[in-house]
Length: 373
Ligand SMILES: *Cc1c(COP(=O)(O)O)cnc(C)c1O
Image (cartoon, rainbow, N blue to C red; front, side, top):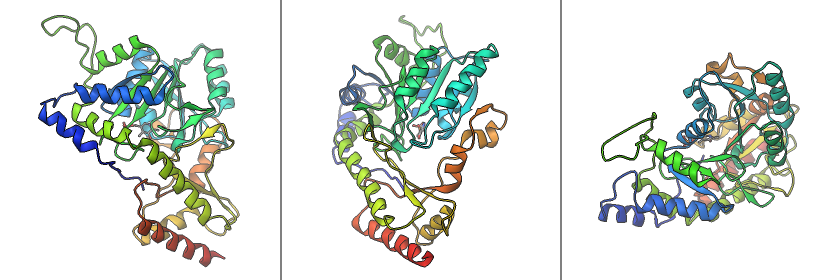
């Protein structure tokens, strides 16, 4: 569905790390990868390279002061890694439904949740909004609410490196942004993530916490609990090579989206997930479809038809408020996210799919569509 796609220069950076014996969670590749990301994101971004996107969300929560007993508002339709770090902090996630245009956090239900919690004397400590499948969330509306109620925004851009909203790069909208370089993301370091901030002190704090919170002293001295969350110089070498092909990967993923639009162009009942208007530019990390209720087939039957030919497709993210582990969590919304989950499918979207791969996909989908006419 979305496999690692090397550009060619990654190994040179890794070899350089071996040659110079920088086999550590620091070194020239870490600095070089951070600089490449800062340059790419613009907006005076400061980037701390970390061991995962999950670690970045965890540190973001700590840096925003989220602790035991606090409440954090989180988009329900997302990967569990958006919400889990809230629980690591002993805080409680409250889940928010999606809106239908971008599938991301609904500004209306967000505000409804904030009003409800404030009325009950529990002002939420942070908001976690996600650019799902690379589609930017409604940043103007979400930021306005974040400012109006002075609740900081953590921007989960794990899936959205290369996406923009009104020309601004995703990852740069939140008080803190986070990125992921897991193996399935648009670029990968085999495993890795980053924290994005405009504040050099926040970056410094993130690196401090990510390297076991060591105070300035010749001996090991600690006045805070630290973490081992820094990215290794080896993995960062892969990242430096991947940054050289990021824009090309965005172009190829977007072509996959166009590929599916073409396949389904005459099939009523199938909608390929697309930007609602030109302000939104998605990297189309994954291409997704939704099947309308009156269609003569369900998303699951498409998944099974593909699987029969050994082609992987997957249901959309199951909303967090429907997950057994979060069954007691508060939820504000209706059934927008739930309906997407029930009617949608993620299709093979990798930037490295070959002509033959694509022909196989066409063959299966064309035969499926024809059989349903
Ligand atoms: C991948 C992902 C993460 C977590 O990133 P890791 O690097 O795998 O820890 C967080 N949020 C979303 C939405 C993701 O897709």
